[in-house]
Image (cartoon, rainbow, N blue to C red):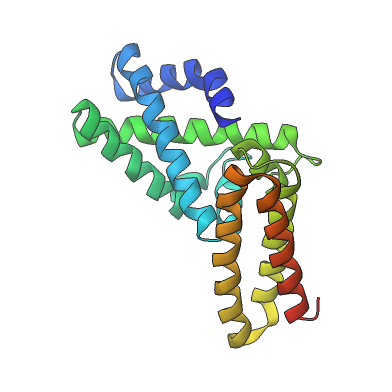
Amino acid sequence: MLDKIMESMGGGIAEQIAGKAGISADQAKEMLPLAQESLQEGVMEQVTGGNVSGLLGMFQSATGGGGGLMSNGIFGGIKAMFMKKIMTNMGLPESVAGLAAGTGLSSMIGGLAGKMQADGDTDEVDAGSLMNVLGVGGDAGGMLGKAAGMLGGLTGGAGDAAGGMMDKAADLLGGATGGAADAGEGAIDKAKDLLGGIGGMFGK
């Protein structure tokens, strides 16, 4: 799904990059696959680490004008990854790569956030719309959304012992998320089993 969305947004993003960074349209278009690759790598790093809530925060900060996006830590990490790819693959200086990466990535994330708002059950960016747009749709996305909520609840009141369990749960959910992209129904069943076990341990 991300590939199709990127195809639809690519022309506009390339135009913005070219104008901001002072490069040719062809150079800007050459950056688009690097931008998508950086975003995918950054997103998967967060998902496999169990940080669905952090990803939500990044995309939510891109709505309503996106004023908080540039100061978001996850955004900064993905931007740095994108900059490095531009410098390594295209031989452009850091100053140009920085302008291109900041402009291109903020435009891309803003567009994805808008897509999430349009695709979701509400006008908000939530876990279900996030996973759907990023390619983990259906039941798996829903289960991961519930998992994010459950883990958030445990953070609020379960103490140090629960904190350790949360870390373990995040790792397990990360594994289930990665599998969902490849293993379909088997990964969904795994996620359900994991969630059931987590809920039982904390009397949910």
